[in-house]
Length: 156
Image (cartoon, rainbow, N blue to C red; front, side):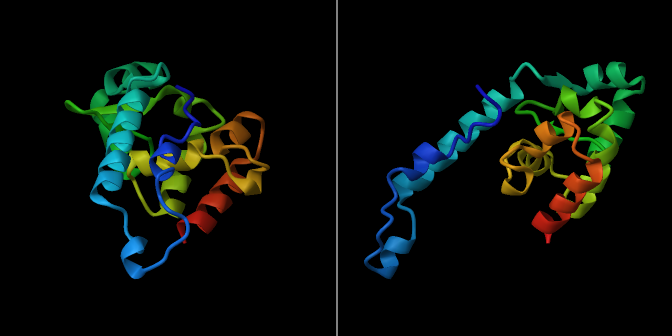
């Protein structure tokens, strides 16, 4: 699955865009269930994507320990998404020299250490970056401060 593809668009297809009453402002139970199911499917696919590594693999990659990696995740210095069983999975690309230095600042500006929120920010295309996802913009040489400033605007 392309990591930049939204899993939610199909779940919204059944929503009526022309509202006729206040009762129509809310999703039905079936629509809500479909949206939650698609979200769970997306998270499982994303966790199992080839660019995701365990905290042990991240420790080896960064020359530190699993305990340090877990501390980094909890403090917002690294992105870790909760794994269905136990522990975290992490996008390997965050350890690239053009991404790693901005992760903690992104966490602070977004006001969260939640890995799913941080991952979503970095992988969602943004108009302010000419339709590029912040992660792709960083790969293509965008200044880290530009991405941090965008996170500040989104986070507040």
